[in-house]
Amino acid sequence: MNAADGTGTVNVVESAATDARDARSRIDRFLAGRGVPPHEAAVVPLTGDASDRRYFRVLTRNGPSQVLAVHPGPIAFDQLAFANVARLLAAMPVPAPRILGHSDTPCRTWAT
Figure 1 (cartoon, rainbow, N blue to C red):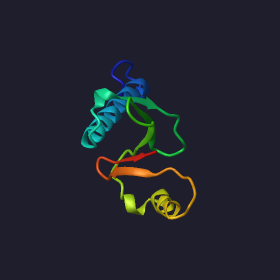
Figure 2 (cartoon, rainbow, N blue to C red; figure 1 turned 60 degrees about the vertical axis):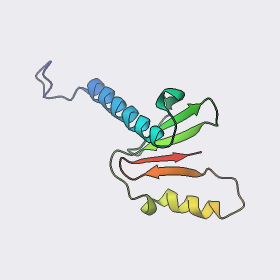
Figure 3 (cartoon, one colour; figure 1 turned 180 degrees about the vertical axis):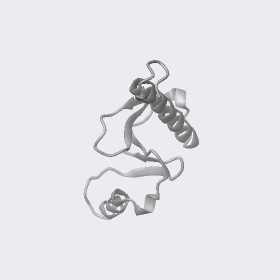
Figure 4 (cartoon, helix red, strand yellow; figure 1 turned 135 degrees about the vertical axis):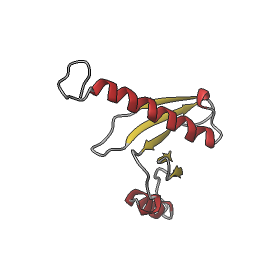
Protein backbone atom coordinates (compact mmCIF):
# COMPACT_ATOMS: atom_id res chain seq x y z
CA MET A 1 0.00 0.00 0.00
CA ASN A 2 1.23 3.47 -0.83
CA ALA A 3 1.56 5.25 2.50
CA ALA A 4 1.23 8.64 0.86
CA ASP A 5 -2.25 8.17 -0.53
CA GLY A 6 -3.55 4.89 0.98
CA THR A 7 -4.67 3.59 -2.42
CA GLY A 8 -2.66 0.40 -2.47
CA THR A 9 -0.84 1.48 -5.64
CA VAL A 10 2.87 0.99 -6.14
CA ASN A 11 4.91 4.15 -6.27
CA VAL A 12 6.56 3.58 -9.66
CA VAL A 13 8.99 6.51 -9.32
CA GLU A 14 10.38 5.23 -6.01
CA SER A 15 10.59 1.69 -7.36
CA ALA A 16 12.49 2.86 -10.46
CA ALA A 17 14.91 4.92 -8.34
CA THR A 18 15.60 1.94 -6.07
CA ASP A 19 16.13 -0.33 -9.09
CA ALA A 20 18.54 2.19 -10.63
CA ARG A 21 20.58 2.46 -7.40
CA ASP A 22 20.69 -1.34 -7.09
CA ALA A 23 21.77 -1.75 -10.72
CA ARG A 24 24.51 0.88 -10.36
CA SER A 25 25.80 -0.75 -7.17
CA ARG A 26 25.93 -4.14 -8.89
CA ILE A 27 27.66 -2.62 -11.93
CA ASP A 28 30.26 -0.91 -9.73
CA ARG A 29 31.05 -4.21 -7.97
CA PHE A 30 31.31 -6.03 -11.29
CA LEU A 31 33.63 -3.42 -12.80
CA ALA A 32 35.82 -3.30 -9.69
CA GLY A 33 36.15 -7.08 -9.85
CA ARG A 34 37.54 -6.70 -13.37
CA GLY A 35 40.03 -4.01 -12.43
CA VAL A 36 37.96 -1.03 -13.57
CA PRO A 37 37.57 1.47 -10.72
CA PRO A 38 33.94 2.62 -10.82
CA HIS A 39 34.96 6.29 -10.59
CA GLU A 40 36.89 5.85 -13.88
CA ALA A 41 33.90 4.54 -15.81
CA ALA A 42 30.92 6.45 -17.13
CA VAL A 43 27.86 4.18 -17.07
CA VAL A 44 25.07 5.24 -19.42
CA PRO A 45 21.68 3.47 -19.45
CA LEU A 46 20.60 2.16 -22.85
CA THR A 47 17.10 1.58 -24.15
CA GLY A 48 16.01 -1.91 -23.23
CA ASP A 49 14.19 -4.56 -25.14
CA ALA A 50 11.11 -6.54 -24.19
CA SER A 51 13.01 -8.62 -21.65
CA ASP A 52 13.66 -7.99 -17.97
CA ARG A 53 17.36 -7.28 -18.61
CA ARG A 54 18.73 -3.76 -18.35
CA TYR A 55 21.54 -2.55 -20.61
CA PHE A 56 24.27 -0.02 -19.95
CA ARG A 57 27.14 1.39 -22.03
CA VAL A 58 30.39 1.53 -20.06
CA LEU A 59 32.82 4.23 -21.19
CA THR A 60 36.37 4.37 -19.90
CA ARG A 61 39.15 6.80 -20.76
CA ASN A 62 41.53 4.15 -22.05
CA GLY A 63 39.40 1.74 -23.99
CA PRO A 64 36.49 1.19 -26.33
CA SER A 65 32.96 1.46 -25.06
CA GLN A 66 31.36 -1.77 -23.93
CA VAL A 67 27.83 -2.92 -23.18
CA LEU A 68 26.80 -4.45 -19.89
CA ALA A 69 23.57 -6.43 -19.46
CA VAL A 70 22.18 -6.63 -15.94
CA HIS A 71 19.80 -9.49 -15.28
CA PRO A 72 17.27 -9.22 -12.43
CA GLY A 73 18.23 -12.55 -10.87
CA PRO A 74 20.76 -15.34 -11.04
CA ILE A 75 21.53 -16.75 -14.48
CA ALA A 76 22.95 -19.98 -15.84
CA PHE A 77 25.22 -18.37 -18.42
CA ASP A 78 26.05 -21.56 -20.34
CA GLN A 79 22.34 -22.19 -20.88
CA LEU A 80 21.58 -18.76 -22.37
CA ALA A 81 20.84 -18.89 -26.11
CA PHE A 82 22.91 -15.80 -26.90
CA ALA A 83 25.95 -17.31 -25.14
CA ASN A 84 25.73 -20.37 -27.38
CA VAL A 85 25.30 -18.20 -30.49
CA ALA A 86 28.29 -16.07 -29.43
CA ARG A 87 30.45 -19.21 -29.17
CA LEU A 88 29.38 -20.26 -32.67
CA LEU A 89 30.08 -16.82 -34.13
CA ALA A 90 33.50 -16.67 -32.43
CA ALA A 91 34.46 -19.83 -34.33
CA MET A 92 33.53 -18.26 -37.67
CA PRO A 93 35.43 -15.61 -39.64
CA VAL A 94 32.69 -12.99 -39.24
CA PRO A 95 32.74 -9.76 -37.27
CA ALA A 96 30.54 -10.12 -34.20
CA PRO A 97 30.45 -8.73 -30.67
CA ARG A 98 32.43 -10.74 -28.14
CA ILE A 99 31.36 -11.66 -24.64
CA LEU A 100 34.16 -10.36 -22.42
CA GLY A 101 32.95 -11.85 -19.18
CA HIS A 102 30.00 -12.68 -17.01
CA SER A 103 28.92 -13.27 -13.45
CA ASP A 104 26.09 -15.72 -12.82
CA THR A 105 25.51 -14.11 -9.44
CA PRO A 106 24.85 -11.23 -9.23
CA CYS A 107 24.00 -11.69 -12.87
CA ARG A 108 25.85 -9.54 -15.40
CA THR A 109 27.21 -10.03 -18.88
CA TRP A 110 29.91 -7.79 -20.32
CA ALA A 111 30.29 -7.56 -24.08
CA THR A 112 31.90 -5.45 -26.73
